[in-house]
Amino acid sequence: MSDADQREAALYARFRELAIASTTHAHTPVFTVGEAAAISDGLPGGHSKNLFLKDKKGGLWLVVVQAHLSVDLNALAKQLDAPRFSFGSAELLEATLGVTPGSVTPFALMNDGEHTVRVVLDQDILALSPLNFHPLRNDRTTAIAPDDLVRFVQACGHQPIILAIPEKTAG
View 1: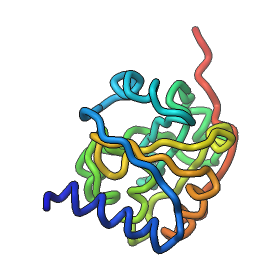
View 2: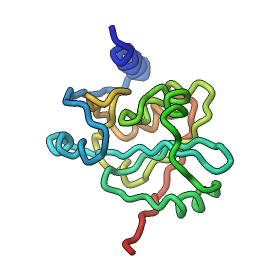
View 3: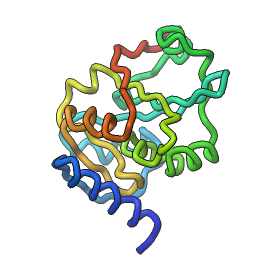
């Protein structure tokens, strides 16, 4: 069994423990929101962009928003009273959440045993159902209910911050 298969199996075992219903669809690997759009068009519900961020003081953040949203990171940092954001490195992502770029997902919070990552969920994405995320690998998409996402995040030892995410304005 490959590492990806083992991570995915561990996720589904966690879903069973938490009585979370899910549906998973296999597809070709996707690495960007643009590539995922071709696949997500056939899947109902909300599709996400998951941003792994590091603030200027070294704090780690996972921001889960709708796929089409262009996030104003400066405004978001101000809203969260956090130092300026930048994207976390691939090495830090793998060390903290156990996934590679292109596979970032709130499900990876199960790998953050130190609870070092703060989680921000877009309130608008939680209004969509089901919600679609990678199951710790980028060649599948797993759908769950929004309430189950929040419950999963909490069961991983994180208290999600739910808020309206500021968008970049043109110009």
